[in-house]
Amino acid sequence: MRKLIIYIVLLVVTISSCRKEDDHLFSESPDERLSKKLSAYQEQLSGAQYGWRLIIEPAGGGAYGFYVKFNNDNRVQMVSDFDSASAVTLKESSYRLKALQQPSLIFDTYSYVHVLADPAPAVNNGVWAQGLLSDFEFFFNDSSGVDTIQLTGRVNGSKAMLVKATQQEEEGYTTGEFNVNLFQNIFNKILQYFKQFTVGGQSYDLNFNLSTRMAIITWTDSQGNAHSFTTKIYFGLNGIEFAQPFLAGTTVVTGFFDPVWSNLTQTISGNVGNGTNASIKGVIKPQVLDTEAPRRWWQRMVDEDGYWVSLTGFHVDGVDDAYGLTGIENFVALSFFPKFGTSGGITYDLAGYLMNEDGTLTLSFGTAFRAPTFTADGRIRFGNYLGDLGDIPDDAVDPYVNTAIKMLESDGYYLVQISEDEYDMVNASNARAWIHWFAP
Image (cartoon, rainbow, N blue to C red; front, side, top):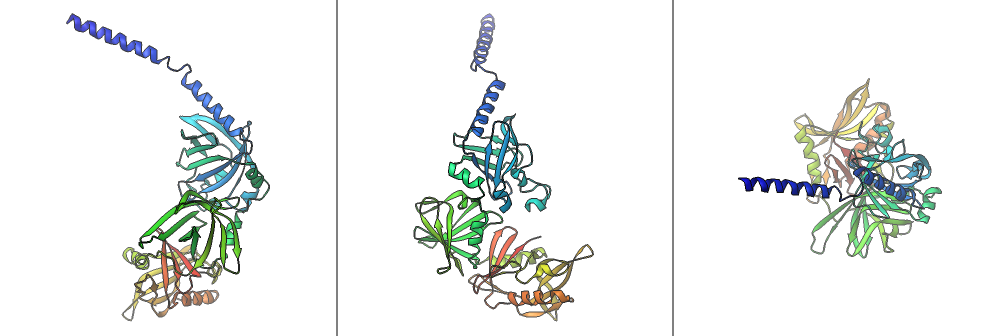
């Protein structure tokens, strides 16, 4: 027993000795070490001679590009690719570094960074009270380096990255050369919905969604197997940049740069970021087609007893709202109800017009179509015109008739699923007309 007590005493002494030694492993306190880290980050941020490129990927989707330059007085100047004005208007605000569990970078007065997180939908087309689920407070990741700093949003977990800018980039961003409309204006010269991207002798289907800032690339391999790649995109000085590079064979594609339009070939030529030439052109039908999408789109609202909504109707030959639906007094949206009702023993679908009648959303009138048919190659063909529901206002007659005629195109439509609740319906005859549907 006595020996046991001696052993216990010796063990306690040994543990205590270890603890005392551990206390001297660091010559500085945790607060001192944290203060040194913050000072080092401050020096790194403000010491970048030509500033930084900042890329933010909000939790709500997409990616956004900025140019930022920090100084030692906690001031930062920036431009943003959010719109054409913010791209050429240098704005100054304040920032600070603070220890919030981890060393953190905080943009503490309203700036272009805050636009993405603004809770008002009118500012960024985001979710009410949430914006684009972005951040303006970020903590530094351990993976940060000398020329690249990785950040994570403290509230929504947005990803962000700072990359040291070159002298040429600084000059471009701060002298009004950042034209975010350059690529979009050239890209919109292609009138077809479906685009084909060619690099290194291989062609790919390309779906650029410049509003959601996403790109989807699909293709088939030599065995006929379908593949798909999705990346977030943002605007750079010379074109579109990919947040996640795409490997095209052995070529790393980081974006599409220096776009040039040819009227002769109806093609956009450019490069993919490493001197490799590439091109984009319109096509009527993609390589990879979801042949079940039309039936899935139609059947979903049958099962839910619901309807699809479009805010602007058809886009035709480069023109949004080609038939002027938004010009109808009190117009809210075009809707599509599969199996809306029965007339004379015939079940019909309805393209209905949702109107604001004294503050109430009302289905006021619409076009009835017989049941659609679905083709083996992935098209929906709407059934013949059956009749009209309700009274059509005088200012709605032309938009109404033109929309109905367009829906009755004999070749029908392909459906492209954009997300769980969104589809684009593209005419099969020439792919130059389409309508965006979403579930309300």
